[in-house]
Length: 295
Image (cartoon, rainbow, N blue to C red; front, side, top):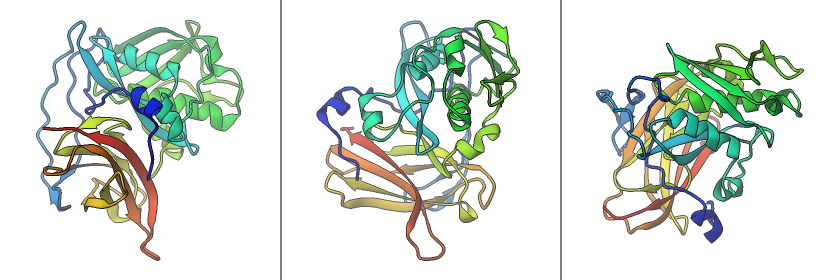
């Protein structure tokens, strides 16, 4: 299990789940739909999608930022000031991972010195203008991953279906000498950069309450997702399973809740995985260290 340092804990902001909102010019968004399950693991009905109001000036909003880990995308969390939360998320992405995220093996393929020049969201397209430093250095994997980081960060919002990247205010067909596309990008363009299980919420370091709400994307055998929660000493305190909306070669979404009532506040770890059909071992493991706080 992951052990935290005091420095890492102090460097991490609370993250209570994504709030889907666009930038200044976007309409109110809604929570992303996903399959849900009970704490014991059985599939349940998909919850109704409720509208989320555009955050007001000065209101802090939880967002996801996506970094790199083991040649794949990994989720980080930040609090940014509304209403321009897409801009805030991009600025947090360019700033790089926190101490805790670095302790968890996260890094960023976005070159140091890359600046956000402008961002516009209209008709489902986020057009982000970055400084020319964004395409400097790195090979094909680095270039693809940094573009994936931008695409994943911006497409967490229901108001964004596609992302186009400009450099120094100019349209470009590709990023870098490797020719990574720059226009009308979606998450489907970066499935090779996506772990087979990606927990999008909660993010590492989040302060959470019961019930613990978990959501993400996956591509597992027969769409089966298993999970467990351990305490600081590594003892399993809860475990179960759920079924994603798709699997076995097809990407789907998953969501479930874990009843943590009665568990003493403190550090816990969420572990989401699938069991190998050959020997039952845990594969495609995704761990998220959290802090359970009182009701």
